[in-house]
Image (cartoon, rainbow, N blue to C red; front, side, top):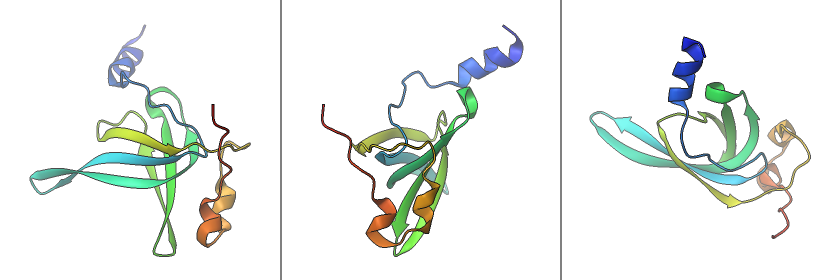
Length: 116
């Protein structure tokens, strides 16, 4: 194992966050304002995942005041405290870029996954 691989394995989070594209999630992130830190929640739909290992990231999209807002999170970032899965979605694509063209409720419309 070379030095780069060793450093990358140290940066990985121990607990795996279990979600997939199409799920509605709440991402709890630490935000620093001056000297204070607080937890901010970004709730939306996972429209894509990319990368592998330490470079893994995911994109969450929400509609705020009629405008689409997307945010890309690093999967193994120490700023992410937790990711809650609100609803599971059933999609047949790896990237949901087609949702960007939609307006209103249709912009977040994804089939619900069957109950287990």
